[in-house]
Image (cartoon, rainbow, N blue to C red; front, side):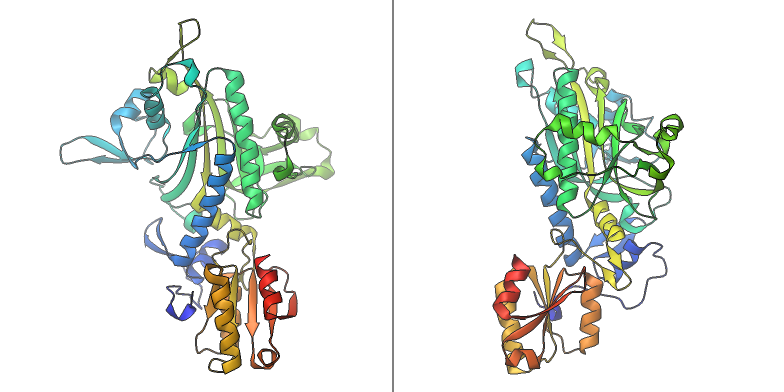
Length: 430
C-alpha cells in the first residue's frame, strides 16, 4: 500500500479529549475516529490490527474444538425475561421497541440466545459436549465512556459457550479455554495474568479475568511476583498448566483475600493496575434450568447441561497492547498484530535508484508493506513511522541505493542494519 493513497490521517497534535496513551496514539496514528460518545469508526490501519487480533483468537478457539458461528446483534427481550435477567441487567442494556411495539435489545452478551439455539438443536446426551463461539459487536450503554476503546459503548468481542453433561466435563472445558487464552495472548506478544475474579452479571461461582498490567488499568490487581506465564504454546498437559496458573496467587481487588495475601513473603507481593482483556466463567445450570433446556440422559432421565462462557475483548485488546507497548515516539506493535510489517521510507523521491529499490520492496512485501512515497522531508517520514509503530522500517537513501543496500531499523529495539535488498526482505519476512 502507498501512503500517498492511503486513508491514514495521522495527527501531529495530541487530541485534548484523549486521557490515556492508547487513546492518544490511536487517534494520532490514524487508527480510529470517534463518531459518538464511546463509539468509534475503525479506519483502514486500525481495522487491519482488529482483523489480525480476531484471526489469532479464531485460530486458538478452533484449536480447542470450538465451532464458529454468528449470532445477531439485536435480541428479543423475551429471551432475557425467560432467563430472569431482563429487569436485573440495568441501564447498560440498550432497550429498543420496533414499529410493531415488540421489545428488543442490542445484545451486551449472548448467554440467553445461545442457550435457546442449542436447546432447539440437540435433545440427547450423545450430542454433548458443544462449544460454539462467535466474534460479534456488542453494546453496553456505559454511563461514562472513556479511555477510547478500553471503555467504549460499542465493542468487538469473542464469546464462546460450553455445554457439558456434568461438572467434570464443564471443568475440562474451562481449563482448555484458559490454556487457549494464554496461547492467544502469547501469540499477540503480551503477557496477560489470569486472576480470580467476580462473576458480575454473568453469574456462577468460578471465574478468572485476564489482565495486562498497565498504570491506566481500571482494576486493582494483586499477584505473587513468582508468577510466570510459562510457555503456553509448548504446554501439552492441560491439567498441569491449569494448576500452574491457579496455584500462584493472583486476584483482582473484588476477590482479593488478605489472609492468603499475608502468607506470601513481603518481597514477592506486587500490587498494581490491570486492563482486563478477557474473562472466563463457569456457571453450571443457571441458564439451562432457567430456560428449560434439558437433554435425555442414558437412563432416559432429563439432564440440564452444565455451562460456561468465555469472552475476549477483541477491540479492547488493541488499546491494551498499545498501553503495554509504546514509547515517547509512538506505538511499538508486536509483529503478529501490526497493521503493516514494515514501512518503506524513500528518502529521495525522484531518484531513479531509490525509486527502483522502493518499488521492488513494495512489490515483494505486498500487503505486509506500507510504502511512504510522499514528497515529504525525511524527518517527517521517520516520525510518522515511529508513531505508527511498524515493527520494521526499511530506509532507502541515494547513497545506499547506489550500492544496492538499504538501512533496516527494528522499531522495538532501535537496532539498525546495513543490508542488501534481498537480505533485508528476508529479515523482515522471516
